[in-house]
Image (cartoon, rainbow, N blue to C red; front, side, top):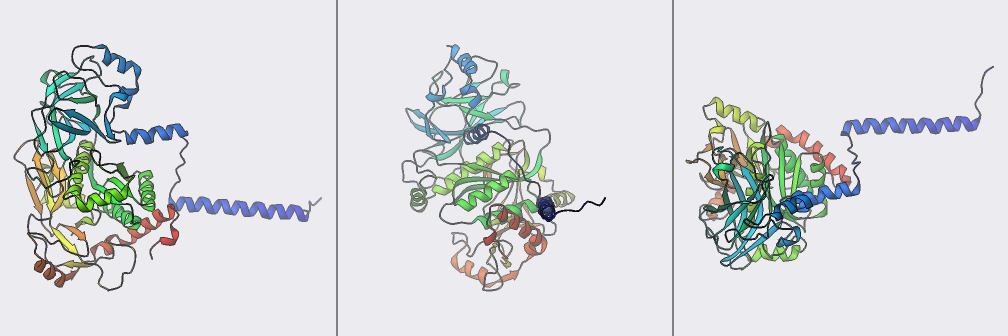
Length: 501
């Protein structure tokens, strides 16, 4: 006998069909947009990861493990391992060492065995006078040893080389790289913690985790961006575009140091960090200077303390270089309005292969630099979209003078002290640098004005602006992909109304 459906049953079937169609649509849409990652960790697990990232330079396991702390406190031979509440912080990211000859600030430590016969622990610190740190000792703590190994600091270097800039404010600290040489009898071991003291066998009130990120296979390129500071202006579209451009030309990861940024920019950074394409590292100034919690005070310092920002560039660049010593072959140090653009090829990998074909093996050099070319906006007077890099297609016909404002990539197996315009040291002199021919690649600077400097006079800037050529390589080569990816990123932070067209 035929089974007839009531009106109510038909109604429910229609509702069920609508839900099925909606589910299919959502599944297809999620497939197109990529899988959604659901974090199933507990609140405390998430919070633990957040705080470990904040205190990334602290030896949290050793400080909070009562067995380890008790083990290192049992000895009476030389020095004492500090307890957590002994550590003298100035802010979350810096520790303080007071000496009779001044204060030294301490940020991070890194293991370096690029020269296996003489492994080193480098300490990133800061002092008030360039190249004149007080006498220091390193206490190297090894897991299997009860007492520290003490070594005298015989070498330290100002991160800006021999250049000493005016700094009239007493709280401005100048970055230094401090060398802790591991003794011959311990060179097969890796210390887990280093403390700094001003007197032999003195008690330490600081502790730095020794970063050691050795991997079986290193990736090719990483990009390091110095402290991002834009708390009063949303530039999230520009940040997303810049990240995507660097990924498109060959970067495996973009590492961004952040002081203070606006809310939407913070959301964009979090999106790319979830995608494992970006690493975001919060950073503050050394000493008792204003932190990111007081951006107005920070802005005053930026405007009134000469060379202050340049000092803090040094911290970010050095930390990024040494933190990735064993994870990337080359590290590029560029700004948010700059891009190293391949000329004939699509990626940096292809450029390096071409250099090798021409007899210039990048692995033989400490650094590779690209000449600086200014871009002056779009060929039309009306801005067509929110994209800065893609829409800039008017370039100065001439480059900056050789050696001025060049930027490039640093070989992590050869460089020692890195500076965005040069390498200031290498592990085995002489340092060798090469300027890549502009037919292979350029440093594109997407600004509305050229720099008035002692090298480039105002009249030369005007000549540059009046002698422009069309250069739309970025939009032609990467435009479609970049815009699609930025569109998706903005959608992900619920900014669909701000999506550029």
